[in-house]
Image (cartoon, rainbow over all chains, first blue to last red; front, side):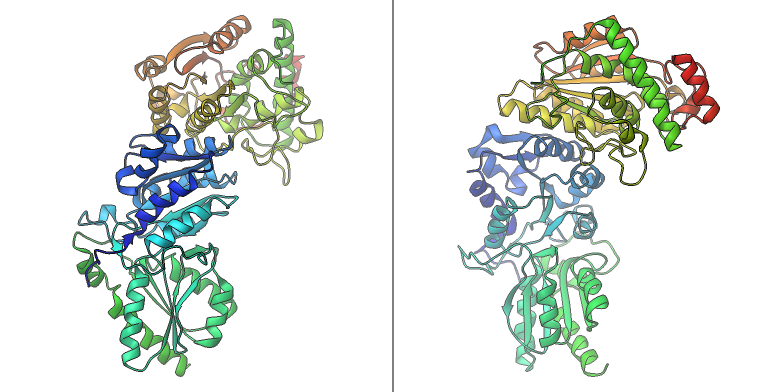
Length: 317
Length: 275
C-alpha cells in the first residue's frame, strides 16, 4: 500500500511539538543544515533568536548542545538519523556521560528516505543510541504521537534520541490524545493468539497484518512500542501471559533494536517465543518505500508469516 | 563572590610551583596519568585562575562563574592540582587520583568534581562545548566568559575546526581558547605524527583574533590573558608555546612522559628540582 495523503509524518509532529515546547524560554533548537527536512524550520520561523545554525557539522552540534544544556538550556538538536550516527561518540562522551538533557532528533530514520539509497538509510540508530547508558530512545508511529512525545521530552532529566520518519503514515492516534506517555507501550488492538510489538512506520504494517490474520481467525494484539528504552516490561510481561508469543516489527536492523530489546528481556525473565521482523544483516538500496518494504522483507506479509511461526512455536514447544 | 583574584607575579609563580609538586605526587601515587602535558599547561592555568577568571572556591558551582573547559582532559592532574591549591579539593582527594570512587577521575569529569566544567577524555570536543556555553551566556545576557584549553595535537581532530568556524560565524566574543603548544603528543613529536603547521594562521583564517606567547613567561601570559578577557568582537585564541614536562629536567621535551607517571626515584629527583 502507498503512503496516504492524509495524516502526517512523525517529523511533522516533531516540528509542531517544538512550537509547543517553545513556551519554555529555555528551549533552544540546533540545526545542521537540514531544518527544512527535520521540520525544526517551524521553530526557526517563529524563534530565530533561539535557533542556532551549525552548518553541516554534526559532531560540533552535539557538543554545542551539551554546552548549552550545561548552561541551563533545553537543547533540541536535529539532523537526519543517519548523520546523528556520525556524532555517536560525541553523544556518548559529551552528552550522556555527564547526563546532560540534550534531545536529539534523527529524522528520515529507517529505509524510507525517498530514493536516496543505502547511505541515507539509518537502520542502526536505535541500536547504537539504546546502547548508551542514561539515554531514552523513542520512535513514534505518527505525527500526533510524535508531537506529544516531543513535548514530553521536556520532562526528562537525561538525554534522549527520538527517531522520526520522512513518510506520511496513517494517523494512529486521535489528535489531542493525552494518554500517550514516554515509557508506556500502547495497546492498539487486543487479541490473545499473538502479540505484535511494533514501532514507527511498522505500526501501520502491524495493524494491516492483524487485519489479515483476523480473516484467518487469528486474533492479534498490536502494540505501539514508541519507547524502545526504557522498555515497558510490565506490558511485555502481561502479554507474555495473555498471548504466549511475540512478533517484533521494526524498520531497523534485527540486530540491536526493538526486537533485540524484547529478546533481552524475555530470554532472561519470561522465555516466550519471539519472531523478529526487521532488516536482516544487510544494507538497503534505492527504491520506493513500498518496493523497499518488500525487497527488505519487512512488510505486513512478513509480519503475518512471523505470527504464524510464533504461534506454532507456542503450540509445540 | 567570584571576583577576579589579581595575584602578583610572584604569587602566581609560587602557586604554579606548588601545583607542579601536586601533579608529580598524584601521578606517582596513582602509578599512572599524564604529567608531561599537565606541567606544560599549568602556568597558563594558574595565570588564568589567579587573575581574571571569576570563580568562587567556596561555591565552585556558582551559576554565573566564568567557565573553564579543560578539553585536553588527560592533563587532569593540572586541574586537580589547581583546585587543590584553591582549596576546592583536599589532600586525600588528589592522592586518590585514578582510584575507584575518587573525585579525581582519570580524565576531568564534571559529574565527579565540583569546579570542573566539562567531562573530557575524548579530544576535540571541548571547543564545541565551550561554544555552547558561550552562546547560552549571551542568550542569558550574562557577561560570563568561557575559556577552553586545548592541546596542539588535539587540533588534528576535525571537530576543532568545525567549532572554530562556528564560533566565528556566531561572533562568540566571550569564547577564549588557550592552545597548549607543547609540540608532543602521545606517540611522538607532533611534527612526526601529523604536522599541523601554523596554528595561529589557521585560527586567523577562520576569523579569530590570535596572539602567540611564551606559555611559561608569567608576565607575558598574564598580559595576554588580560588582553583576551577584554571586549573583543569575536573569539580569541592564545597560542601558548610551552615545553612538555616543564620544570622537571628529565621530563622536558621527552615524549616518554606524555602518559607515564614518575617512579619513586624519578619523583624524588623531580621534587628536589622543584624545592
